Image (cartoon, rainbow, N blue to C red; front, side, top):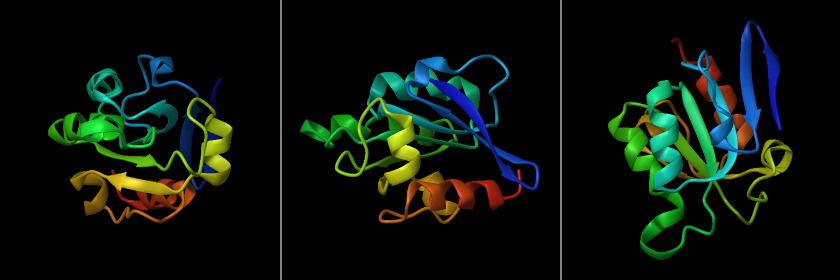
Length: 132
């Protein structure tokens, strides 16, 4: 599933079950993805220069494998965070949007005020409020 939601005031967010649903033209968007936050998805998302991208932490895992993509996005200058797998199901963006709670943030996300413990919607609102 992929859909765009209007947040009002000319702001929008793309919701997608998988980050593999990114397409040309998505550059600069705010994207809520229900993919795990591993290296592979970080590499997929990095070329799009997104304003914010979110993933599922997949339980974090061995050597933080479930959030390793955040470091790749950090190096690319992209704000990124994961939501806790205990708050939303991997692969279900509707569940992320309704129930997601931020678990891990990269430095760019922290720099715009996104913090662990806030809801995913609060994180999206924060990114949307920051001037491009």
